[in-house]
Image (cartoon, rainbow, N blue to C red):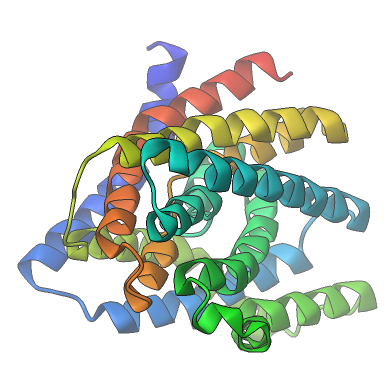
Length: 308
């Protein structure tokens, strides 16, 4: 079997099988999406982050470099989305929605299983960091983008969103415990590991259910532009910044692939919350997830064969 097909079969297909299960069951029976989302956000993701940060083989210097990579990529994608979107006929509201759809990608529900299947432990460790950075930026800068200068104009309210994220407290506690050198109590370690291991199936079924609940699938030039900028230009920029920051080996490959994932569902949820082009935001999530079956496979193939 050709290498690209092997990647699609071994990495992408298992992900889409579970997404399909969530999609089908949501259409047939209907999940309580708020409960599923809260389970992911408040229980499974924090447990995963704690376990991966506490047991991570990444040094503090490597974590700092991953942050610099994320910051460079974020600024570059923001500039591209903000200044190019008017060329595709975007007014102010659509400009904000397009920029958010490019900036915020699915590093959790989709990124964790893809990184784990493609790169094993190092992939999970990278994703643990990216999930943290993505959530903090999405619920501050992303909120401000979609609020469009109304509630987003009160930056005190926007910034306080950081302290409502369980991931922030997880990060602090995990690093303190890691630096202390103290082992986790046995019962706590087992419980956290069970929760961390349960994240992938729960997250993918939730993603499928969320996709089944997105109402509008409109197509137009702004949508095609957003898909191209998120799925193609995103990983290209990720590769450039990996070279600039001197990452090597599996870590470099995992970081590039971490920039290739489809638009985050949270971005569409914020668009719906603030009524900022919700149909467009939902369409980008839906189609970017479908198209990513091809694009993410290609990115994994390219980094594995040309970043050695």
